[in-house]
Image (cartoon, rainbow, N blue to C red; front, side, top):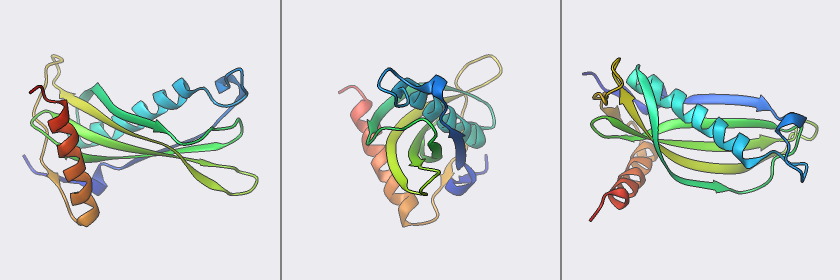
Length: 152
């Protein structure tokens, strides 16, 4: 099985936030952002596995600021690490005020996906090719998160 480069897994999703996504405080509901994070992460995992994938876990999700109706939400996802059948994906969420052009880092998440065969069973994924120091750094951090998830 040939390896795939980190840059070949990258996915970018962008969406303008509309009033139906708002919570009673007038900002975008966190659950809407969580769904979009899972979608962006899933696309990156699909690109790597070229098969169906299932979300196995969300290791961490940090919200750094509110998203307002009318903002452009951009989600950037890529693989950090792969195991035999699992993939660690990082997602960075940025918010752009379309009137001012100001871009803010709004949220970050780390998710694990499992590749599935046609019968819905876990299947092996290609190795991940790290090409630069940033890829290696992210891979080391993902390995640490994986070790923390494992029972003692």
